[in-house]
Image (tube, rainbow, N blue to C red):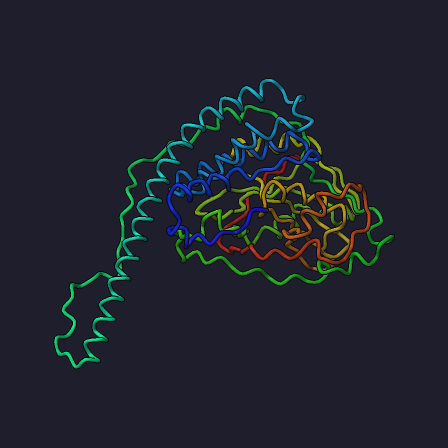
Length: 412
């Protein structure tokens, strides 16, 4: 996991060193041989969508980081994946053309950022000199006062709030993702769950932290206009806020009602878009699926990708019901969610338990659970240690009562 950085103090760093640091952060990309290679290609598509948003909004640092991650992944790292030879030639050709388009954009961003860093560094040095001059003036006045001098402080006024205007003239153009919309990927993104015996073989599972009623997340204040601060940098290491329409769970439970009455699970994909460094869930995509009282397996998942490509959506997590159980993540749920969170750190798992009228908003613990589950090779329902915690209630979500969820039901 990348180390969090206090970006407020980066202006004291020499510009070239600061640029190297940013580039190195963009190079932090790993490939897990146990993750299907096509999932990395899907993740790459969504990475570019977010980078283009950041570029359009003028957040050049974040755009640069994501473009660098994309190039690092598909120029250096992906070839080491054991499934890379199986990727269709058409996909590789399109990916190569995208990389060629990204490179000049990234270099323009590098020049733009270096120019900004130079101005900020010069501002830092000017402020430092001004503070030094003020301190000398204060010391002179103290000595004059101590010596009975009546001359007073007649030094020139030194401004205390210096600003440098950053020239916004150069705006690189975002790479075109239209080519990627034509690529069909195999259905390898797991959305199914299988908790067979989860309430029988290991009854303690249902009593973990997820089994209790989940407190309502904070609401989203729409009157507070979003704006960029340094904390919006991906260098900060914190999770971006995920905004969820408040009616999402009710709408999903209505769609799942017929299955719930039969004690059959229902699942769906949470998708949306990025804006002002916030992730907005806008759609539930419900794929064709087969469910049981404790499982839900999706089919024809390439249809999900078609919808996302058509509407320029990124994957932000998944949602499913527990018709007769409480809201928690079983061992199989943990493995299912791991694949989402590895590709998108902010991805959430929403569990609706209508029998107990509870809802859980979960993520794997970033400091332990994510790596632990990623390294676990067991399949099916199996026990995991209770401590340290493998998952937790999401702290980075907000409910928005004014936004309404959209549904794409592919079962029809």
